[in-house]
Image (cartoon, helix red, strand yellow):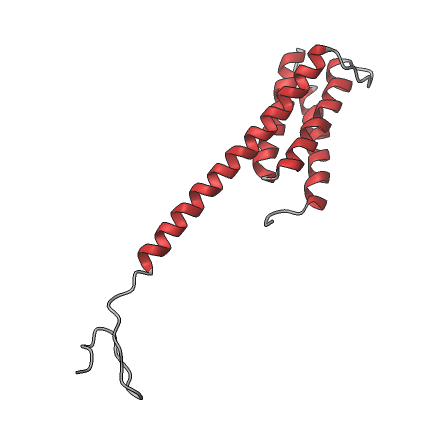
Length: 141
């Protein structure tokens, strides 16, 4: 698969998870903090364009957000609200990844269409042995 290797994507996802939590501490209110981290996970999914990296980063971001932004003492809990938050993070990361995939597919289709328009062959002209045909020249008789 083309694109960035997982050896780059996973550390980048870790940095994004920690960084988005640090940035979110500036805001007051748990919902606003979680929204910042969820948006960061979605943008990461669009940048990474790999489902597995987006999923891993969303779960990692959920761990940091639950432990430090919601609970405040590094405690992970698995209440229904926490699991719903994890679902939101995963959905935003995968939605970002899906948007990037659709965008890449549209660009590929445009490129193919442009290549076909440029590569339309003219009429085939046959030369006798040893002769060369010039473009636009009439075929030999």
